[in-house]
Amino acid sequence: MTLDLRLVRAVAFDLDGTLVDSAPDIQHALNEALKNEGLQYFDLDQVRGWIGDGPDMLIARALAHQGLNDAEDELRTRLRRWFDAATLAAPLAGGTVYPGIVDLVAGLHRLLPMVAVTNKPTPLARAVLDAAGVLPFLDGVHGADAPALRKPAPAMLLAASERLGVQPRQMLMVGDSEPDMRSAQAAGCPAMLVTWGYGHEKLGGWPDSQRVASPNTCCRRCARRAPAANRFATPRRPSCPLAEGPPSRSS
Image (cartoon, rainbow, N blue to C red; front, side):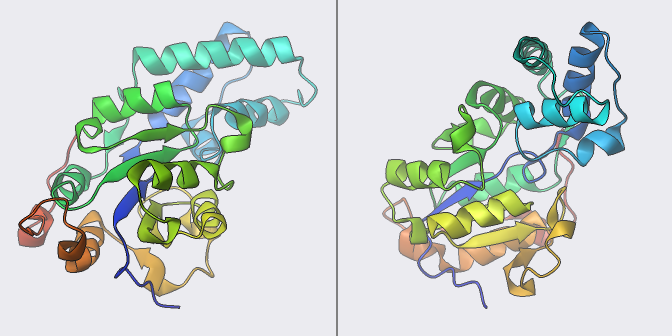
């Protein structure tokens, strides 16, 4: 199936693995929490494979990996508090914004309303987006502040489309993992799978027409149809600086 962007009037971005490579910061926050409770901690490659379902599931996987599937709720609560504190203290100290992302969101901001839709809780997500320099370009941040909201559930995408005043079929979901794509399907949103993140390898059957290999390509594809939905009276296309040369690394 070909991805049809003609109806798109807004864009929803995933955060971890889509806008930022936050795996080093997530590893740091998780290990700080585990160390504070005298538990085993983990290397970056291990933690990277656990990213995508929010901090509660991340902690559950870390506990399960050391035989603590039945850990008491009090321990899980303490670990989550340590994790949140470590994240807020250094939201993007070790991670980076993917090359070209700031150019992408700055360019599309001229044309389309954008939101972040993430399985991170909203306060943590806003802290990371602010540190990344992306927050000023967004019209909202929808985080999974309750388990029922987590992608692949459609609730956050439906709330985001309602907030922006568009139909779900008019909002493009851009993400790197199966929960992103399944959430889009459940909500009735078109979806674009980025291949620079963490989870796209698990979606080998996802159509090539719905994959995008760089922020530059994402910008170009969205910009081709954007004048019809321009938030300004006079249509303007995003500059997409990546189109004129190699990406500049943001940090």
